[in-house]
Image (cartoon, rainbow, N blue to C red; front, side, top):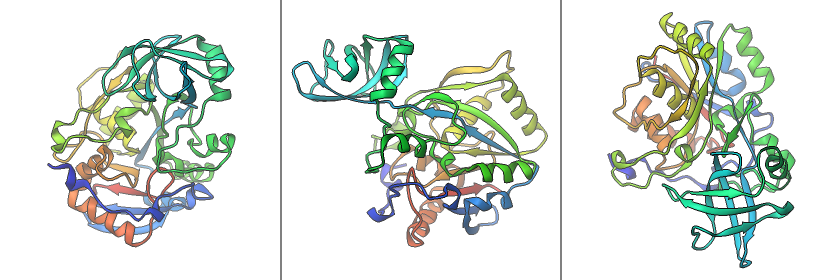
Length: 345
């Protein structure tokens, strides 16, 4: 399939610049694939479409202030996007400056320094900082910025933004971007879901290049997705296996949860302990889903691996038709935007 088949035109005014207030007042497009039924509702009413035979699977990864603004020793502007910690003082990063190279030293506030020590895949680099662990994170929390996507031009103060661009159930620090399907959930919505008897489980996928890197090949099959780190406890894995075996409907909240569940449960594995490893599954049309039965997700960027994943679940033409309808009805798009509840039956 061609990358151009996943393109669409979006009016700029439909790119959400801030979350709905309250969050669960966001619009929710409910689509049943087998019935070909479309319902327009609000996230606050999500419980209407759930039963005690459902399992919701959330990604509890927490966004940290992963963007550092500084300068080169020569004085030129530079910035880092922290993607993954490899040791107490070494990180995989994206470097924003002219002609990054091994040996380059970058200077930041609070005396923080980084030296580029290795070139990696996907235009990423390995850097070594002059502070480690507790001291490093204390400095990062003072001078680091939340790495908002470039299509959001936020003028919100940093502290408030850290709350806005975070799910209410975020727990495990490590994401460079929010698992945005979860941004719609509020405490009152979670309570309604629990009161309905819905089973809730939490996995951790730290969002990085695998989620937000653009597809850069015209033939989508040629694209290689970047790996991301996943952690799931043995208890959660056992709970999910039992739920699936009992015929419960597995509903992933977001593409990150979807990729995690499909990557892990597509293999016949007996869990001696929890899962702690990288996941690099790339889901596009033609993929046969092994574990999930439904998905809650936002409206994604054109030509992204995320819109391809949605297309794999409900079909490309159906996906593009729903996007066209959402644009006509002025749904809000992308990270702070509205979303969909997609069910196979």
